[in-house]
Image (cartoon, rainbow, N blue to C red; front, side):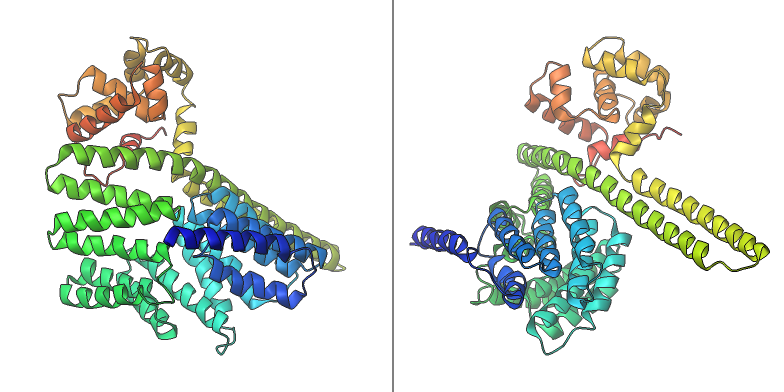
Length: 487
């Protein structure tokens, strides 16, 4: 019956889409579709269908010469993209939304765009940028009408996400404050579950945690939330940690598996990754090494693919910052040119002042670029390529040449030295494997160039983690690449 209802819904939705846009809609109707209807459809149709739906509304807005509608549609699409880990595309759509809205004075739209930026940067592990954009979104949200349900719900969303950002930078008290602010606006099962998680992780008050988890699980079963599979997946993920803390490992595995299946169903790769990691941890405690290895391997493969898109998005984000700063400086220079003054000395002094300001800000911009790029794997790889022997080492590795390890040790002696300090019994084969990881080879490439099965590469990674005494949560690639930095 459930499948039958789904089929009926899909048919209705398809027919609705085909009939929705032949007629022209008014601006007010477009606003309703983009804000209210889009929110309702988020839990009812797939990300792909919702993106297509918004694209059609954008076309309607273009035909109505309505840039605000275009901007809302772009922001809605960006929301679906960052949720599935497509950060580069999400930022591109948000850039388009920002461009369309630059001459529009609308607090709700400005808050929406800034909030989506904050979510993207949070998922990209750039917490300061995430909090900065979230602060802007909160400023706009607090200006909105409090008697409008959509506006109230948006402010709750801003508070809720701000709480998660503070938790990410280990400011748990601030996180709890904003979760309670969100609850005062509207009771949401996800916020309640996060409060329960706080009491589990930080206060170790399991009675309070149990109270809030029960409240959250009851609320998710109500008519309003029962079809929201994403929220259910997150709540179960947090509840799994609650069970793990109580050493109820078998129950925790069952809950994590339920969360994992829902996360896959609604295409939330980062939640899938978190579930993989915790399943590996629980199986490690149960001393089931085969299961632990299985989930570590799945986590590693998924993270590799997610990191690739994240790296591209970091570059796009920096380009956006650079462009804004350059435009800002250009506007200042033009203002100076037209409004400088009459006296030549004054013009000269003002020119010198703005030039020095430009140099200082440009210097700060370069420093910011360095900080951002250091966080990304690509920057480390680019630095390593500065060494004159680097390309030769890469070629030897690809040919599986016996001279690969010797030349690597000669060129980067500190890498193997540091590894042998951790475990003096590492074999030449182990060191070669570590060298390929340090050089940035993916699992697929290592299997190809070493004439190994992909599964064998994953097994070797698992054994290497053991030899290097790494915890389940520690990323093997990041650990080895951080062994030594090329100065």
